[in-house]
Length: 567
Image (cartoon, rainbow, N blue to C red):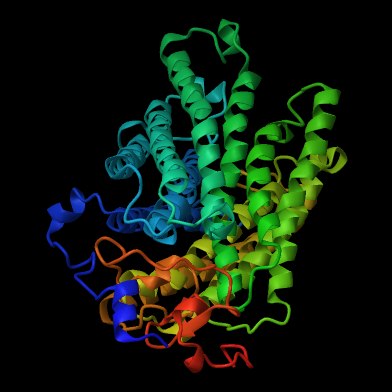
């Protein structure tokens, strides 16, 4: 559709890709290339996921029978604490922004890197140091048994490794802030010429909103954890009632960060889903501006609802009522996204490959998580459900069922772009089925247990709940097998998978105009600005394997778009 000279002018010629430009461990350890840093993040968070997953499987194995002696009560407390802390601070929060975001954000903007490459590398090493300190509580701190929230006054009185863990979380906070600052400046200053705010991919919008939360909310957690360390070592009376402190004050500080942190976890996942739904429907995303602004609305409203974690803490009835009302309000922008995704699917040319299966799984799981949150936002039902397995199931449906499925969908979507090789789609879909079915089998019974009064975090329980726990344990192992299968499929594809074109899924955003794997500088020449969701009025060039604006194509050779692409 374009002659050779125009093709060279627009896209240049392939050169050495970022994987082969320099080899050896030093070229990776000291790299400033955002793609390599993103891959190192991806490897790191995968290790954290498997570690936290092993902790979870040990917990579920212990709970298989109501009178299990597999773990002592003290070991059980340490196991669920480490599972939660590693999963939240080392996996879920950095998984999509720092890993996938680092790899594709600059390419989506037509840029060659992030604004501050050295800060980007520093954020990765801070992540390593912070995770190391978190795990040091096992080796040097007599374990950790406070729960991942480090609630006072127990975290002050216990002789376990609270200082190691809180200092690790403090360092991880700096890593998150560095990433957020980098993304804010990159999006504001390094967009391609002519790429206005409403020509940005929705994944970029979600990362931008997430970065706002990272920069504004994370310092609150850092200061809170430093005060906890000072309280524990110096007994200065901030949170400890023995010295005139207030333990509920810690909860206010902690949740002022940690509820916005929920959206650090889920907003990037929503951005990934917006990309997958549009590409694999080959249809313009429905309600682009509503989805974009809903990301910002979620980021802002997320700062106003921390008190709904504290309905049973003794705060005033007026404040509790206000927090309940705002909690219902924050559901609106999330619902906007879901309904717009469903509208995009309507009459789309849907391709049910692995990324799309994960996207549909996300919509179902996140929908269940959101709807069950209404019961916890309502004052009357929350009193009964607070601190039960209902809360555990709700949290996992939103955080794990949302973030994990979106991460896997995004990885499968951009994997051919990163490595230039295609995976086995059948095995990828089998892995998705195992993840989806195993996840539901794990956590649906917990809704029933919680509604019947089964408290969370108990090492033993009444015999009437044993059948539910056994179903949940079986589901956890199915979920683990599904994640492991997906990992094997991806690793095999990166090493031995068949070569693929630069745009095997016919996506229209800018990152697909680069070669696969991308060039060291992402693009040989400035990419041609396209509408990331316009699959109809733009022209798909078979030779270039990407969408291009119609004015660059030969009008005599442009085929009529009479059928959807995937038919």
